[in-house]
Length: 159
Image 1 (cartoon, helix red, strand yellow):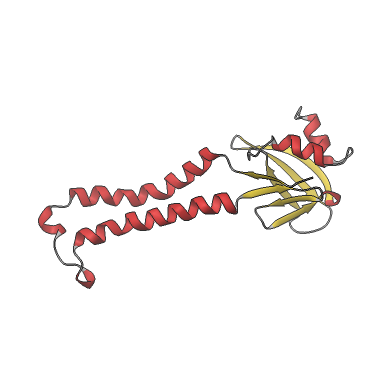
Image 2 (image 1 turned 180 degrees about the vertical axis):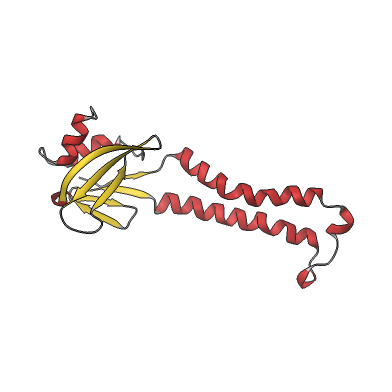
């Protein structure tokens, strides 16, 4: 089987990027309210004040782009035949799972998985991540019949 890749929903990426950019975009309002005679005053490095007022907008745009890239490339969950890789860092093998239960944190569904060995002892798999198929379906399909993950998903009525 091929690996299944999941990432945060698009609305969450838009929200995080908007929250990153809005404080920087506030400097546009300050630049617009600055009297024209002050905008042309020379500031540090001999650049006019209007250039310095736009600097936070440029930095905000760069930070927003980096935030989007981080969410698309790093904030992922990959399900394979041997286990799960969360955020490209935490690896969980199916054989390590000792317990699992569903959790709601601020309205977002997670599968909290405890493992017998390894670090960290518990991982919270975000069930709201989106991919080509529903994440709960892929987890049920890839785990063994008696697995705590499959039992927890079946008790909650998940596929």
